[in-house]
Image (cartoon, rainbow, N blue to C red; front, side, top):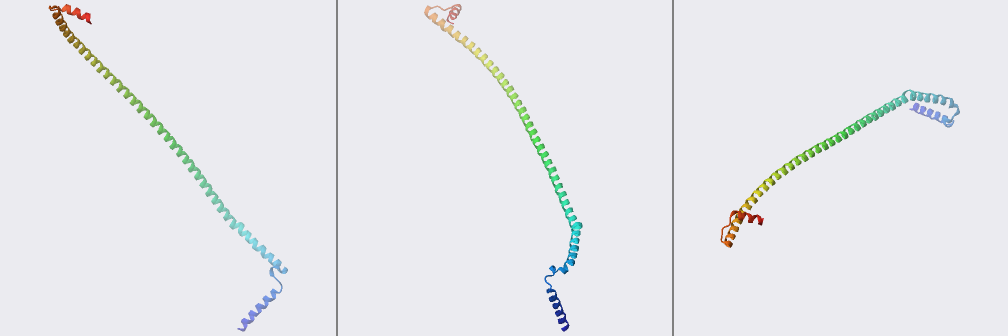
Length: 181
């Protein structure tokens, strides 16, 4: 143990001896040594940065830039495709609307034609019925006039007979009726 204690005491003495010279980085006798290791350390750090780390960062940035540009190009393509699909849908909607309008116009024209034909047919049938009714009315009127005329002839003959006491002739009754009409 004494050897160990002797070594510890020797190390403590050396530390005390170094401490007597002040703060080692400010010791002017150590500047060349410190400058040498400073240049070695920073030179090695520069070489590692310039040859390893910065190229890796550059590759990563280039890869990210390429990915972003690819994504932007893909987005632009998809936007153009969406715009094309939108225009195609609008065109299809417009065409369907026009087709529906033309179909509706054709149906309206067809219905108007059918209505005109039905109206013409109804008017024709009504005219025929009116003509038939007029014919029937005229026949009944003529028949009624003949019946009334015969009754009038009979009444006129009865009146003439009751006034004169003689039976009138048919010519006399006809001439009297012409004067009454």
